[in-house]
Amino acid sequence: MREVQFREALREAMSEEMRRDENIFLMGEEVAEYNGAYKASQGMLEEFGPRRVIDTPIAELGFAGIGIGAAMNGLRPIIEFMTFNFSLVAIDQVINGAAKMMSMSGGQFTVPIVFRGPTGSAGMLSSQHSQAFESWYANCPGLKVIVPSNPADAKGLLKSCIRDNDPCIFMESEQMYGDKGMIPDGEYIIPIGVAEIKKAGTDVTIVSFGKMMKIALKAAEELAGENINAEVIDLRTVRPIDYKTIIESVKKTNRLVIVEESWPLGSIATEVAFKVQKEAFDYLDAPVKRVMGGDVPLPYAPTLIEAYLPNPARVIKAVREAMYL
Image (cartoon, rainbow, N blue to C red; front, side, top):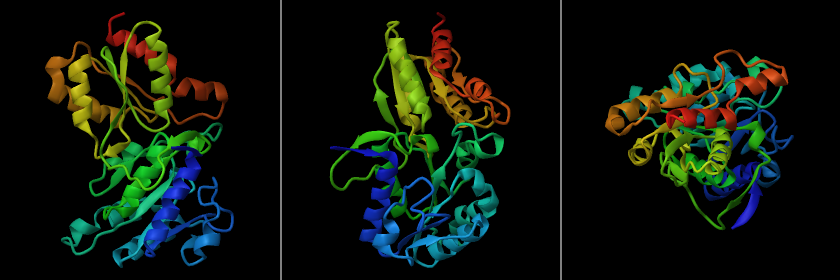
């Protein structure tokens, strides 16, 4: 085991896969000469050259489409969006091109492409640069949507995405690129669609993903001081969702709290709550609780950002309510 930063784990995953398969290339804004907007591709231009690490104009619609065409013709592109906020310019290509191509072609074309970059809030960036798009892309059949919470998962899941024959949306966080964590030595991959129980518990199940896992784990730590033993599950993948792990946990704890950064309507939390009440209703001792971002465009002021985002205190309050304390 060794300690690396989140950005370093991403770079290792991409570089190892590019060494393994010459059909893989990286394309996006500032990925080459500038070493990546967040330095996730640092040194890759020097190693792989300008034919495989490609700087693009500020034209997401264009380079997303180029990537999809390349994937349909036997290459395996990694397309970096500087932020998924900018992917809205390219969403027609992602949804109507990549996600639907295998179905519309009757299986004649696959689109083995990875779209990756940061999602969600990242400080004082205001409304147009702070949106969480996990549930948007997870709504679309044909895509796989992955949201890792730590360097080890980031590396193992990104390698799985690069090898997958379906288009994958790989969502990171600007606020996590500098996070450090232990990763295994040598080659490893993590299967897509398998959640992980980060902390075993008996009193309540807390489900989250991405950088909100920090909030969930911090809340669980504080709850332990109140003799409340929370089980914490990291979804890791939000399409497909590992419902089995969640439902088995709820059958044990009889209570569920879901923590998610995005807007409440049509969220991943909404879907998880529906599935649990459908498959494990008789095991629930309290209504499912959600701790979500605010139902407003994210403001600029730090005080309003703090009020908008989930935090450990809000999670603890939801757990207490679920336990009728």
